[in-house]
Length: 93
Image (cartoon, rainbow, N blue to C red; front, side, top):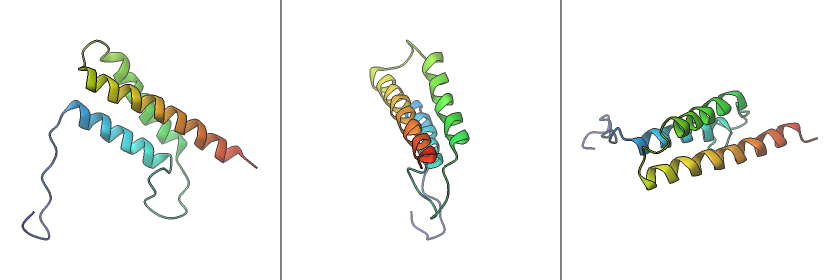
């Protein structure tokens, strides 16, 4: 980046970046990546992004490289676990 106002180059539009983008959105919605203080997690939006990843998992079964499948599977499992944790924190006394 040569100028202060110039945008950095965009990453390649590949499957890994798509999974990363959806995962990052889910993590932000779960409150795992706080952008501002005192913002409540948006579990509906988090669930939506996790379901998008799960849909990709179903629709791409058998068509991904081992690395792509592993990244997608790990993302879905971990985000589902984090979602349950966030639900439990919300309902805890």
